[in-house]
Length: 628
Image (cartoon, rainbow, N blue to C red; front, side):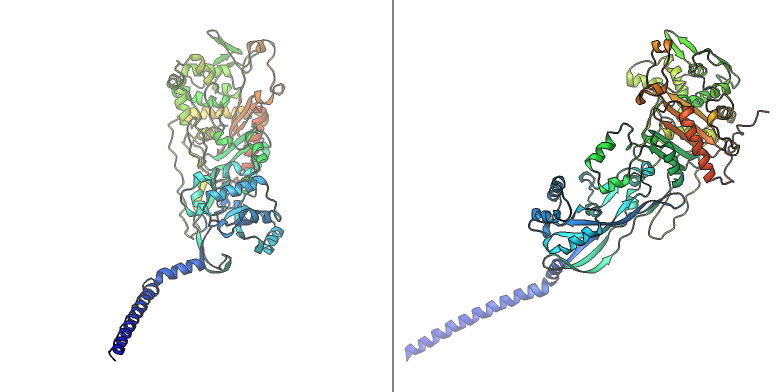
């Protein structure tokens, strides 16, 4: 009996221990479940949602660029593209092989794709091909089960309707390089483009806009099921430029395939109406991606189509500089308009002989207007010798030569206006009088851009006010806010005596409108549209003594790269100046025969297109009036 009782108590203890262990186990399990389902509920709910919902950043629409009248110059068009998301496919090589049966993928493209995959995070989609035809899109969609990781995206790409005509001003957009990554998520989106040159680069941040977001439900394989929520981004701002698109196209067409540049601007406001550089390039090609052959053709072209010559081309100004030399002398009282200087075709200084372009017989005795009208080199050799290089350089700086003008485009070059101090610092040599004489006809070390020449002409024609060029009229945000119109620009007076300016303008009038003037054959015969200007021809080779003693070769007898540059600066109409124009034709020969006729056609066209009355009248007396 005692033994039975002992067995019963032993069994009861074991049962109690087992029951207690079970209670403890279930209590721990309940506590863990409470912790996970109540205390940590939000955390795991979020994790579960993240497995089910994908968040995508949506690229905003890039802002348009329009001309002064609202005509589109840069827009966006629909673009079908193939995306590859590496984390959604187990075998990238196999996926690319299958895709290559639908759209050709060469070895170079394949290697680039694989290289980019290694550089980027695997969950980020990358572009395999853009601008797909609808037939290819349909075939890819039909074969979607065999193409894991491949999706079709409908986006927008930049498009320039007038392509090469606007490229020097607008520039182009292209993909974001590694060096351009700033941490902005927008820059990591597949196919996102940023401005690489021109206005597209200058106004890039404003044109980009702000990205939106999309919440998409996906299945276990990562395939999108439906969009749950979309928050649209903010499109980029619209940029309204000062450019007249039709005039821009006219200028580009008029210059043709010459290696040339032209700037047209309003002399009172500084608005640039046209800025052309030829030959140009198709900016759309950069957006879609240049082939190796296309890049080689552009980069090796001796006429530099990728270079905006209007702001980055540097040239000796030649005889277009003679107005500055004259003003420097008049300002110091070293000459008067009536001062006469004799030209016999050449003059000797020490062992050096300085020739006039009319070396046989020369021009005879000339006053200031005659010196400008005939573009006499000997007249300006003597004037420059009297003035000195430092005073000439100081006057040139007032007119914007050899300075940065901040025209809102990347790549603008300063040029060079030499002085005694410059030569001593850079070359360790003293300045010579012969160099001053050469500077008097715009040759030697000085270098200026076509934009600077246009600004110089505008400041001459507007009465000596320091007008500055500008390309942007307004940047209009897409948020609906109407920005106030910018105030009319005010430009300071440069302190040039009106009487001195008047005499120089009369000389420019005579160049074009007086028989015997160097540009008389290129004049505008309509007196309401008449222009004034100054020719220039810049030597790019040295003419030897032996050649001068026999016969100096004509430009058409020389190889293209040894021919003179042709220049012409002008303004119109002469009675109430409003427009300034500068032309440089590389190796074009004579300024009177090549550049002046182009300027004539352009100034006639700009006045025909916009002959509105009521514009400010030049404070200098009309150049056609006789002195009382």
